[in-house]
Length: 197
Image (cartoon, rainbow, N blue to C red):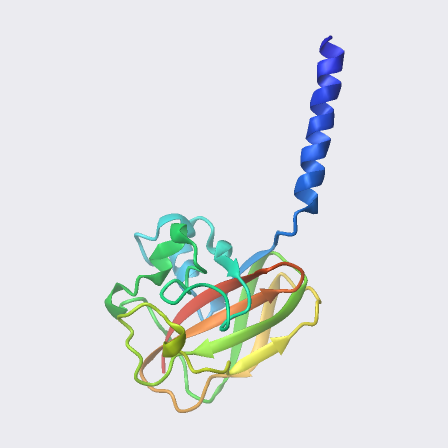
């Protein structure tokens, strides 16, 4: 009898494993650290009262298709995940900001805990005159990304750098939204970085 119970348990384990392996979810995760993202500031303990994101900065994952789809307005930085809501809290516009120069070349860097087949990376910036005390919305962003890097299904290296230029005509405080679109799932990863032009 104990032998049979062991075989049954093994069979159930194999079925559960096969079910999990067949589920099309992203096992990949990542975030931007240049310019430093809110989730990385939390993981570094530079910013406090961050909740769960401080232990898993790579996990701001939500539906892909931004800006036509994806997380709801006001929940973009957390990728629509309530457990990471601290990323959407503007904190009165006091998040630490990286100094950058409008129109100048820049190395945008992602760190991955697991890479994945990738469609592309897109970088958006807030419009001139946006309110940095209010949660990020699509209306607050320039409608087109200022940088798009196509991957066509390839897997990025665990540390990935994209060479580009900061958007022109920007002054003062802004936010850069980086979106990593996974190729073979319905998901994308969202990373918000506060910058000062």
